Each structure stands twice: as structure tokens, then as C-alpha cells.
Amino acid sequence: MKLLFISLFMYDAAPEGKGGGFTTEEKTELKSAIGDLQTAMETKSKDFIKTELAEQLKTVNEANQKFTKWQGEKDAADGENQKALDKLITDLKALNDGKKIERKNAKTLGEAIAEKGQEIMDGVKGVKKGKPFSMTFDGPIDMSEKAVADMTLANSLTGDSVVTYNQRQAILPAQKTNFRDLIPAVHSETGLYVTYKESGTQGAIGLQTEGSGKSQIDYDFTEVQTVNKFIAGFARFSRQITKSLPWLQNTLPRLLMRDFFMKENRYFYDQVVTAATGSTTTVETDDVKQLIDLIANQNQANFSASYGLLSFKAMAALNKLLYTNGYYQGSGGVLSQQDGSIRISGVPILPVSWVPSNDKVLIIDNDYIERVEVEGLSIAFSEEDANNFTENKITARIECYEEINPMLPASIIWADFGNSSTS
Image (cartoon, rainbow, N blue to C red; front, side, top):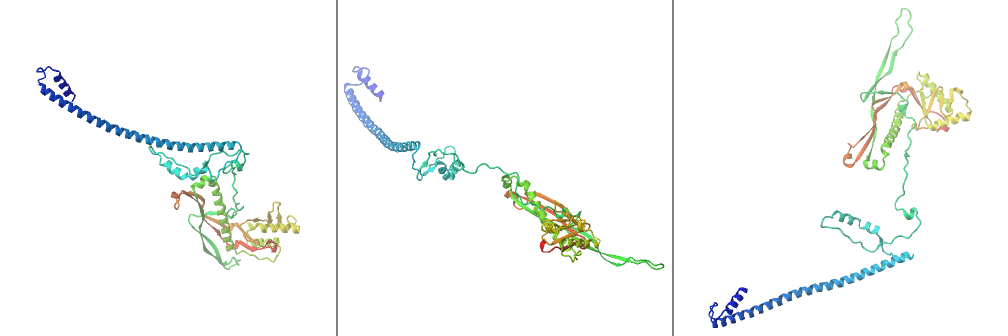
């Protein structure tokens, strides 16, 4: 378009009949056409500019409206914030002046956080780039500090105070004497132990007269089987409790052994009492005299009385009897020591807590009783039991493969003694 105007101008400026090649009529007609074209172009440009200005003005007006709306909202929010700030300043001033601040339905920051605990945990887990976590607290939050007061456990401590742990544990006591400590022990390779017991005889040793035959005698034996058994038990505990109670690992074996010996002592006692067939004959009513007779019965049967077992209560009754009657040391073969121990006819009388009856005594010849052991006492810990591995548990086991063997029942006396003072 610009080139066209320049060309027309050049032809218009050229002398008539020279350079331009246009006649006067042609020039007039061309100028008229150019004028019409310029008028059309100017009209179109004005319409275009008017349209564009209208669009731009619309955009500006919309932006201005949005700004005006935002300004109004901002002013309203600023007004609310200012009110809240003014109230906070007033409350703080009242706190400093010692006035009571209204905290109805207000929570402390710690309480508010505690209520939102799960939401906070879930939100924090989901935090990643481009996905921040934010939350709001419901209701008023009391951010004021508590009034100054004396520091006491009630005012200043939440939770427990520092504790001091005892290095010892108050566990129940074990029995003072165990049956296995009093009798000999033998080892068996198998669980079946056999003793050949003399059960009878025919004939007798006699005097030979000149020219006559000697007396013949024979002996009978009976196989007595001792079938060994496991005396055992176990405790199962979690790995967590070993961390929370670190002393348990050292204390648990003591507990297991205490309870094992209690069971073993009573089991051996019951077995021996059941087997006993020694003589219980006595016509005496005095406790001491009865024991003297029972020991004499044992000796009369060619057995030894290694010791007598009775309860602590029965032992106390004997000592009180000696004290009341004024028996002197050595009187009738009875010897009482300052520690309360007694020997009768040279036989020690031993108090043990696993004799259940206060009016019973057990007299034993240790040459005819033994403890047969296949596997010795053992304590083992293992995770390989039940679901221990998957449940983080440990099993502690205690056991002994054994049995008691009263070889000759006649060597054992189990008898009543005493009167009402020992019952």
C-alpha cells in the first residue's frame, strides 16, 4: 500500500506528457480513486481502533472491579484481625494486671495438638514436593501463660518423678534343704534302671556234726525296675519384657530352680513314704521317747538310722518339750544344741519344710536309698518353640530325667509320733 501511494505521488508530480505517461483525465480519475481508497481505509481503521479500545476498556474495568472487591474484603479481614489483636492485647494486659481472663471452652495449645494427633501424623506422611501440609484448630486456643506459683510436684510435674530401682528383687524363698542333698545319686545310661532285691531264702546255716552233711541254703532275688521320669516345666516370655525388666534374665533361673526343687522334694517324699515298711512299734506317749523307740526299731532290724526328717513345727514342739521337762544334756541319749538342732541316740533329727504333717517322722537308712539320674538338671532358653520366632517370644525350660529308688522298703520308717502338742 505504501508503495502504491509513493508511485501515485511520483506520477502526479511529473510534468504532463513526461515521465508519468498519464493524461490529465487519467490523473483526475486516479486521484479520485485514491481519495476513495484513503477514505475507506481511514473509516476501517477508526472502527478497528474503537473495537480494540472497547475490549481493553472492558478488561481494565473488570480488573478494577476485582481490585475494588478485594480491597473491600481485605479491609473487612483487617478489621477482624485488628479486633482479635486488640482483644489479645487487652487479655495480656489484664493478665499482667492480675485480672482473670475468660477462658471458657478454650483449649491449651498442647490439648489442641493432641486432639489433631492422627490428622497431623497422616498429613506429615503425605508431605512431598508441591504438596505441603496445613491444618486449622477448632475453637479458641489459650496461649496465655499460667500464673507464677510455688514449684511443687502437683503444680510443676506432669508424669512420674525419677525413680530408684532396687538392685534386689523380692522373690519368694526357696526351701532350705532339698531331698537330693541328703541321698546318694547314681547314673543310668537308659531310662530303665534295674535293682535285684533279695526276696527270700530257704534253708539255713547250721552246725555240722561229725559224719553228717552240712546245711544247705539258697537265696531268691526279684528284679525291681525303676522307670525314670522327667520332672520338668517351662516359662514363656516376650523379648520386650527382657528389655523392660532387664533383671528378669538372671532372676528367672532362680525362680525355675526354686519351684523345681519344691516339686522334686514333695515327689520324692511321697514315693519314699509309700514304700516304707519299717517297724513303727512303740508304747510311749512322750515325743522324745517315741523317737528313741523308732530309732531302736531301725537298729534292731540291722539298719542304720542315718537321719530323721520331720516338720519345723514338730521340731519346735520337741525343743519346747525338752525345755519344759528340764532334760539335761545327754539325758537318755538326747542332745539339744543352742541352735535348736537335736540328736537322739546319735541320730540327727532334721527339720524340712516339705514334710507336710506335723505328727509324722521319716527315718531313713541312706545305704538303701538312691536317686537315679539319666540326665542331670538343666535349664535351656530357646526361640524354637511354638510361635516364638514370629511372636518375639522365648521359652525357658527346666528339667531333670530321674527317679528315686528306695531299694529296701524295710530300711525306711514312716510313723506317727507325739501327742496333741505336735499336731
